[in-house]
Length: 291
Ligand code: NDP
Image (cartoon, rainbow, N blue to C red):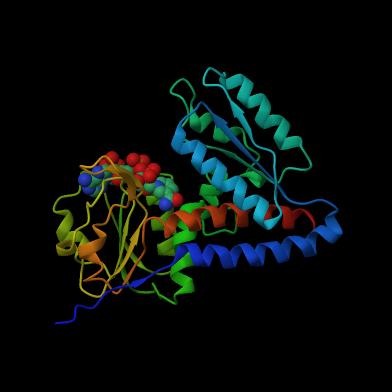
């Protein structure tokens, strides 16, 4: 008997299309602005995963024509040194977006550093002012990962209006802003977390199930309503018995793809969209200065 297999929501392909659109938009604005958009990615310490993310972001910037003004700082860099760097970038006319790559070494407080970023240059959409704008449904820079999820749903014409959306995870980086964006799009939203009782009963209710947890294969087929849309935000590195390491999401892909109608792959799903939204935010800030 044929088993139906979910359609993939291809974040990588959509990200490439967005890069093409951004490139055109930049060319148009640049004629008037006389300079390309600029993004500064600040990385502290030598976390290899962060270094790979930063390289990806800089590569994507180069592809669309955004100038990178990023810097790497040694682990022992102090908060006041970083604050000074951020203040300089806030004043720098060539820079439209500033982002601090997380996580930071333990002696640094991410929240107080994020507060230093000019909200109009907050490419990651994590400044309290931009989060406040999201809560109030006002226009503003949006957190990249949730914005990428919403864009992916829109691209595949998945209407969330009136649907039951269950977000597993409530971080300020993903779960909370994602839930707010779904609410803004008129979904009926439930947020589950580590203290939720009977997670499978909650997730089985979801027309759209979004996992942002950081636990490999937490979401199994039994937890998914047949025909649901499953969005896997998780990125987890796992090593098999043979010692090979690979990236997996929070969803047990092989079983869930047989139950769901749509599913995002990891990698190539939400992760690719996150970078695209970062570039889109940078170009949006740039465009606001030359309207
Ligand atoms: P956090 O660790 O900040 O938050 C995880 C959330 O999951 C928390 O709200 C936690 O609940 C909840 N949780 C933990 N265990 C369970 C459980 N067993 N059942 C239900 N909920 C649980 O992670 P992030 O939000 O920063 O990231 C989540 C995942 O998304 C990670 O894998 C991360 O790598 C990935 N990620 C991917 C991005 C992308 O571009 N694709 C971008 C950013 C993150 P509680 O609040 O109760 O502790």
